[in-house]
Length: 176
Length: 99
Image 1 (cartoon, each protein chain N blue to C red):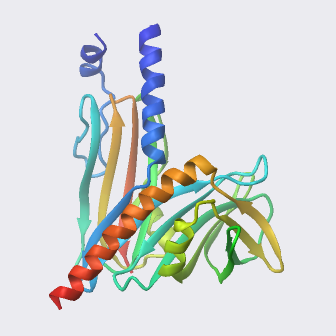
Image 2 (cartoon, rainbow over the protein chains, first blue to last red):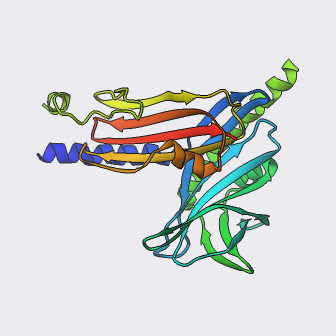
Image 3 (tube, one colour):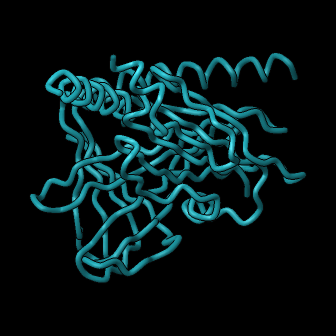
């Protein structure tokens, strides 16, 4: 029984580690390859606040990136923009609410924003983690930021992905 | 003993399409669920569900849930990705592409 419990715990840890890895899908379209970074979570800077979940889609033109974020709030919010900042830069982009759902303990919001692809590559080239601020009117309702060790790992994985994106973009140009 | 006990348990994961796709030790499989005549588009949505120890299953891994997550109204195709270890823990993700 002890062995079974130990095995179960070890595999649960293995699965959790796998789940934390940056996964992406690459799909051919008529205009080139579409890249999709599977949902990842970013912890809140405040205690007791659920982490946000985000995913990123890089369309074939590789000029922009669509970020979709799921955020839970205790009270109803009028989210209208998202602020992404690190020690050097802070940029704010308008966000559109895809849907809002009333949950047992608060609200679930799904929002989307489009940012330049270069901004995404810049953010992930920076050694310190970024902070995502969910803006409701004039104020930041909640802030989320990955831990440094998670950031170091994710940054490396994302740089690999950007390299793959670049290679496929160049291959497409050559074929034309 | 662990392996033989797993072989005779009924905790194998069954995909939404009804295809049994679990491996005895490890599962990491992406399968196609449906494809339509719509173009791939530029939107991707996901939904997921968990199975723990073959006893508890929670989550929303429906096509509609995934489409809603990305605001997709025209679905081009749907993939299903399953990751599992020993049939004890399984995560299934539904990935919807469209516009």
